[in-house]
Image (cartoon, rainbow, N blue to C red; front, side, top):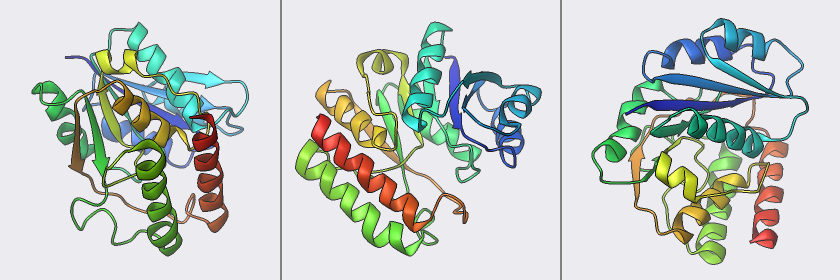
Length: 222
């Protein structure tokens, strides 16, 4: 089975080379979608051996994932992984997150930071005690989704599943929308524990407020 790993990236020149190097031997193709970066993200991804795609303007993580997923489907992927560009996820978990699909036990697999102690001990306070509980409540109340991790960007799906779901949110609300689409289409789901390394970037109070805003948009749209 051909496994493609889609990585949305915005101004990630400090991390993208290491991320591509770590995972390119673990999958059949790495697809980096440069979402309107103003740095060398695109060139470094391409030089590192990834298939590099580029948005002319910054459209948002959800839009970049949609571009990469559509490319993967058009180029023969059997399994599509969504993976972050900032180095917070571990390539060692790729085999774990694709295994249920390869074994025919699931069509969509979510990585969860809450299935063992590795994933959330270093989670920033605001994210752990405010953003995550709020996102979980939104998923449960408005979308009837009960998963342990409401905002994980590390997921895998079969090509069949990817063709059945269609998310419209360009921002961070795509996480909840993808979960809603998976549930709506009655796709077989599994969760597996993943390790996460938190960095200072991307974990700010204002970043958390942006997630909240996008969640509210997801509620209104759906």
